Image 1: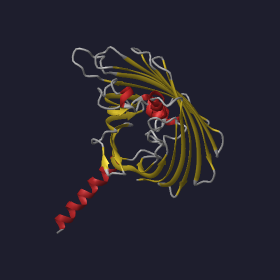
Image 2 (image 1 turned 135 degrees about the horizontal axis):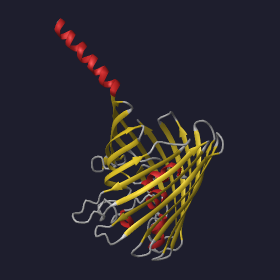
Image 3 (image 1 turned 180 degrees about the horizontal axis):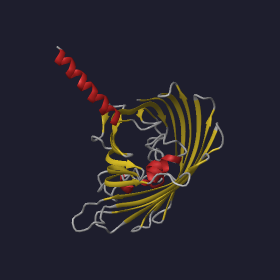
Image 4 (image 1 turned 30 degrees about the horizontal axis):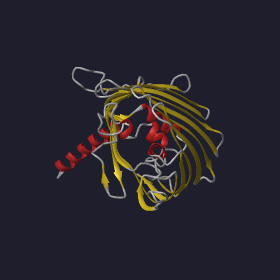
Length: 354
């Protein structure tokens, strides 16, 4: 018995040391809502649905770090998408799968991770990344559209370009009171052509005294190295006072082979009505030029009530208007049904974070 007690004491001591030097956290977001959407068929049909991820993307993941001493840490993150409405998930750790190190020199991560355009826009998005599946800054600016962007970058045509496989991302610590820089490269891994299916980008930002300004540039090659997609993103967020925050963004991507240019201008404001209640209004102007002319606009309002630090009840109303009833305009409208020029969506939902 004494030996057993001693053994348990020793194991407990080792466990205490290990927990002091390293940590692993299970985390996630579960977001479900009911939506009523108009003009979803050619004759203006309506749709009532239970949706997933209308305030924030549902997900679950593991992340952790180990203290290596002298200010150096080893880090990892594994994150998977989650569809609450059906109880299904994407491929395991389809959102993030990285391992890296951090210290006074900055942070270096390797694996599957978001591109710099996405990283830039989510910091200043007028909707705070709500309605991720139809948010123009995410779908068009952050390249989360497999049809338009999936043929370029390290996804090799199997998914959108928002997340890049086989990538290395470096973030420099803030210097001179709030200036930061970043760089990222994704390996195309094609034998005989190192540039094909590759991604390369750089970013810069500033944050001080309530003002955040961010910019990024990236370029992606297709599998044959015959086409280049260039991406430019930028935006700013200004905290006017304890109640008001104003945000402005601009994103543009250009395809050199066809001359296609897709741009998104976004503007919005957050108003804290009470410590628990936040109202958000946002506007997006989506445009296409070069290969063809197309346009659509979105107007979105969101009300969020915090039931606790981790749980929120929310409602939203969205209105989308395309330039014409043609498919090229509806593609930019993002939730307008075929044969329609406008659509509305009313959503009520609940989000819990853990």
